[in-house]
Image 1: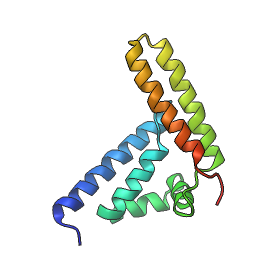
Image 2 (image 1 turned 135 degrees about the vertical axis):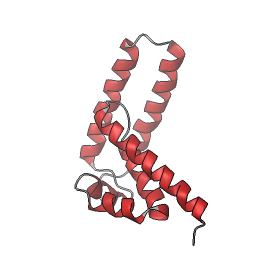
Image 3 (image 1 turned 180 degrees about the vertical axis):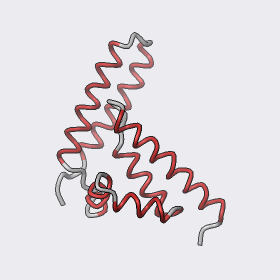
Image 4 (image 1 turned 30 degrees about the vertical axis):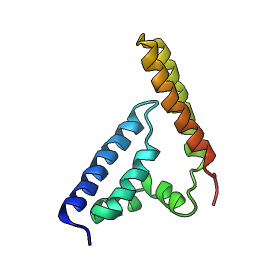
Length: 123
């Protein structure tokens, strides 16, 4: 049994990661799948209501079931994520921000891109 403070921390992580996942769906280049997975993990430990909501939702349920059955990311999600990351790269270059910030963003995008494509596409 988790202590109340640990359970509360898992709930906080679940809510924040769910918010970031929703933000990721709306914002090109910002990941959503990774935050849905983080939310599912933390809600399994701290919030049965959020966990149930994620697994019964028509958008997040299939992603989580694929992940649960072999750490799979579907080809459609990989393609959508890749397009989103490529758009983000263009936005970074045309934003006029400092080259160091662009480099930091490109490193993060590259790591995410490699990680997403290293997962299997089918069970």
